[in-house]
Length: 296
Image (cartoon, one colour):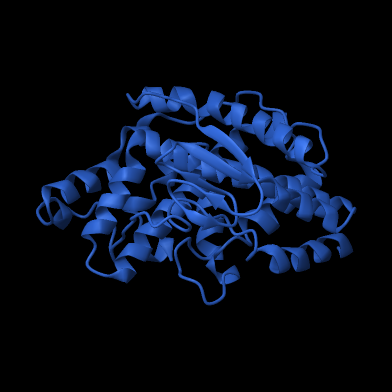
């Protein structure tokens, strides 16, 4: 209980600093939403042809019909996240697993699969998507995961206890899975379609809602992979408790006090990651046909 209590304090302390910063948070890339599910009948008869096509993509993409994800036997790299070389090895192993898992799904959706590029960095990142980014993110323009390795080292070094180390590893696993999910969205056209919808959105509230749909879907798809590989990866015992209670349940816009509501609240993250982790199926991650209350 004391260990887990310490993790709760740690989560509140570092969540803002390490809040995942991806295509819709760091980069000025469009993403839009509406007050009702995007798949409502009225959407087919309103809006520009581009907007109608984009709505069809985000609500009915072939990715949703590819079935449950099977395990690829992914195993966690047994290295402490205490130095640059180890963090690189950890993420390189994990991203290779993610590619192995998602390649057949992307191809089953009749799209061409290409693995993302990986860039490990410190300081401030300058990329085609974001000037001055300060945390890990994905850039669709370059198809690259930009992973700030020093964030993981800082988390790992805060405390040597088992709960802190479990939180650091599970947070790194979640982060890589979430950013990789944006790559899946890019390959399938969902990310580009969401940008079109934001461009056509009537106001800022609508743009923020679609941003939340996009981000919550990425969290859900991350959990699909994690759930499918839970046993081989070793997410049991303390790791499972930390993952469910302090990664799934504590990630949310509440941690970004005063910031935009662009990623979804804690309850929404817990709902969507829970669906992905349990069902292992991309169709469970179709946030674009959900009611507004499910993506708040």
